[in-house]
Image 1 (cartoon, helix red, strand yellow):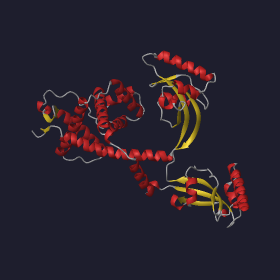
Image 2 (tube, one colour):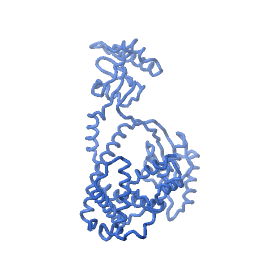
Image 3 (cartoon, rainbow, N blue to C red):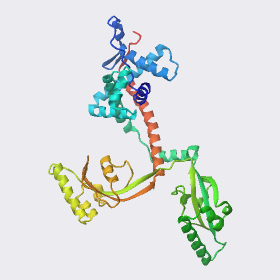
Image 4 (cartoon, rainbow, N blue to C red):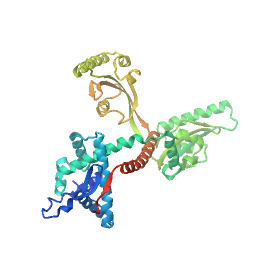
Length: 436
């Protein structure tokens, strides 16, 4: 288990709005001036004790980072401004009906504890030993979750990412070091003479096909290149070294794209003959390969006329008909209440991990191609599914586009959040009383 200090540090890193350690009951002899009003925020107030607790927390965090503290007055004003903006967001969330119930809050607490490698009970004990009131911690976390939900609602809907923006970013990355991928290639050429006759071309193609079949069966590429290749690199075992995409002959670029290290291309025709390339390795770029499943299903939903149990029984009857040999696509078209897939015989196409709800994927992952599931339930209703095929799919291009979209959305969200918070602040009634 992490040390107590590390655990608290991680918790605070995840919860930027949380961190006010409790200092115990206030001394009755202390002047009441401590709780004077330091700001009026619309129809709410911030008192000095709130500001003081936040000052203690922020100062401690800055000292942990070896950051030199600014003068007290400047830090106090900055901290108060943050409290004001937080209070404005909580007010708007309240007026918008945003709530975080105890079930959702408890789930988040479990998630935090798990991320730190402890149970929730241990997490609570660590917080309390470090001087944090657990009930206060829960409510601070609830407030942060409320604010995050408000931001998604107010800012997230305003952020749009166009296909052109994605293309522009990908082009920029490709032309910079971030997009610089190099390929280590080997090459065999089965040459044809200049102005070759059809018979000569046919003979060369047949020879090239034999060489490719031999390589696919496990023959050594270097030895084969030395023996068979008509290329200048034949005596190097066909090795043409590391090349960037711009240095690779144009006719090799498209055949190279689907290859993974160790794989061979199909025959590539050029005026000089028939080429075979092998991707030995690559560096400087991400490749993202996923296990895809092609699956089809039938969905039945409980409704006013059919209870949950009746729906399950109806699906069991369909399952028996399928196991009896009836056509899945026909039954899906006539029975499934997933209208989009029903029109295609229940076919959901090739799906990636994470595309479907967990309960569906868990059932799907237990089956082999050709197997039919028993009826099972998700939040959408009762399903039967059949796994048709599985494959490894190189989703690098889709992955890059997804990452580019996330990068653009994140940048735009940050910009939009700053604008939105500034508008919220400017349009609200705020009165400073810090110096009074």
